[in-house]
Amino acid sequence: MNRLYAATLAVALASCTPNGIGSTGGGGTGGGVLHTIDINLTVYGNATNTPYGQGAGFKPLVINVNVGDTVAFKNADSFAHTATLIPPGKTTNETQFPSQYPFSGSALSQSGTTLSAGWSSGELQASSTSQTITVDKAGTYLYGCAIHYGAPMRGAIVAQ
Image (cartoon, rainbow, N blue to C red; front, side, top):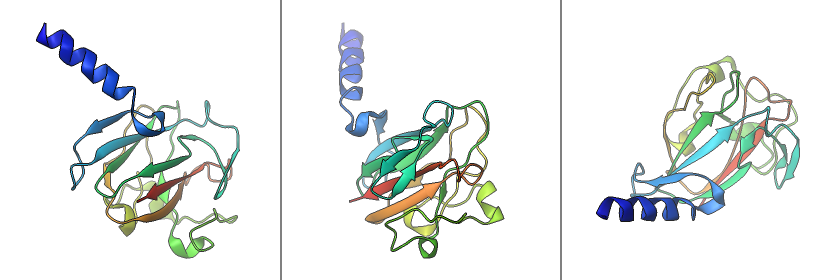
């Protein structure tokens, strides 16, 4: 009976996560929540207006997280993508996606594990999940796919 209760409680809690995304406890330096952002240009390919410009290919396009939480990207598409921080100097006061391609060749290689220090999932093949990125500092972090940036495959993480 205890197993049934635990399973029911787990399902109920998972359905109440912020932004309608799957989350599990732990993983963050402050005992925060793990947020998984789905990558799928095939399913989420329609350009959508966000406060930062047009975005597509990520679900959710804009996510609110807390310092101490963690974020990971899961490629649910049938071909490769990246999730790569747009360097702050390439944005307009970190409030708008740059119109020009903002990445260097290093975006195709995995790097970084903290949100504020710069990071890239590297080239994620179908069904792959990125490294876990710790939300270490409040702010707005714009990111995109280095392969499909013009699609416009872009999203934002807002850390509080």
